Image: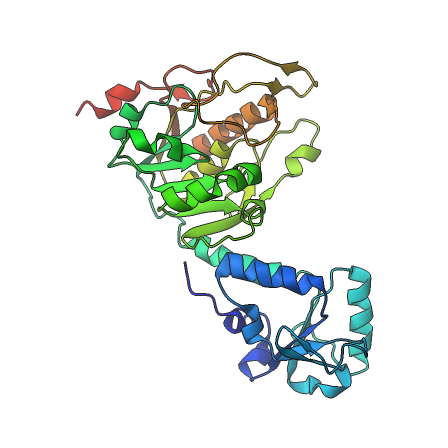
Length: 359
């Protein structure tokens, strides 16, 4: 992971930092604990190390120690040489703080940062990390490995020299093959929490995790990963048709982790994308009209692969997402092929997996 320096990243938003301004945090409540955890998990720093002290309007807290730093009254701070970060969740309270700062002639956005600065800095940093992946594999081919019942260890053995994406509990097949994925993805916080120990043990490649997955565990300490947010506004649309992200540090949600992999593969510049083990036959499924269908179809490649929560599969959204992927990739000269043995996915041209390795 790229080395993260909080002062450097804040300096990209505040010219005062380059002039030697000291950093103060307004607020000594529980939200600061959350921010500390977020920066520890996502960029592996102790943000307290960058803070000069805290400001609080509560006289009972002034003069006390919080996170090993002094708590000051605003009047004690040299505001001409300060950058103030507001650590209060309430927007109404943020407005109240801003009114107090006006009395000290602090107007500039580069001197004081309101609710949301913590995530803004992290996402700007993460955006630049993702840029390093843009067209990294331009013109190459890759395989996206699903977890369907058709997936065979013998097929994975053929992919040891290929670039592959894998997801969720793929590690359950590792005892049957020497193959290991090039990239790993997870956007299901329940799966991540349930399988965290096994992910920590078995996943050694670069990984992509949605933010709720990372915060679902209390002792997150992985390092070789990228984090992303999911844009779920598709749920607001009457037709529920997903978009396709061209900057997947904000991923468009398509109700299946395979859709996340497709967006990443397109961003990385792959010109041929093959799906393997993407059966699209999970049960139970729920349709947009509310109908639920149950069945006795085997869901995954391994009987040890158990669901981490009660769920239904929004099959109409998934199929719509695959259609969106097909349309986007076709318009960008990217070929998607379905090399799955059987299954119900028909959005992409089918190819015989074995014939891909005849030469």
